Length: 139
Length: 156
Image (tube, rainbow over the protein chains, first blue to last red):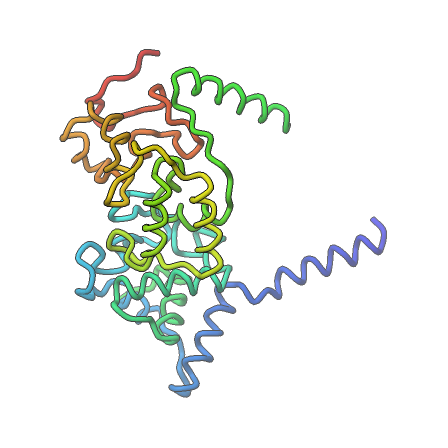
């Protein structure tokens, strides 16, 4: 392998690891956004878990996030209306999750409106991502 | 490797075509992604252009779900649906549901009420409950597996 290939490979690798589109980077982004109005804000997997399970009383068919995403975030679930398979939400089980801020924003945008009845706050999103990344958090 | 895949596709296509179940679904990555998250991406040719147009105009209230899209995606997908959408009145309905078109009703006239209510089917939007290879474009009778097996179609 010559040095040019080496450098190309190295820069490709480092570009991969330094990507802003990772679960941690996304969570950090929402965390700093939340900290602007609540200084010292720290995301909590437990709060995320409670949010995820809470029945909001907004949508009849989709009372909470679990309606479509199930109770075990490391497992595939099924869309409550169409039966469509939904890949696991946890990046532990699904490496594609939380790797695109555009996608994450799109789905928070749709699903928060749908299930919660309003947009989710940056703090709630940070909590949720923390929970998705640590789905085994004990109550 | 590529030619083997090509050959297999050709064979599959041929087999499906033989019993009239092959739908040549045009490729569009945006449509596939955006219209294929909550249900399979329904083939554009199964619904009339006017139905698609009406549907794309109300994505924030998409059959009781919020499926809102960015402007750019919406434009791209609308153009795709207008290009490949059906023009025959067999695919026209005033509900925007493929399952309410005269074509769909005729095709599914033998499906019992019990089958539609089966927990593995749940909804007429769940095509792959029975058309197990539909996502690969195979809608042939041979590719139908009805949960509970109340609709015998296996002659092979």
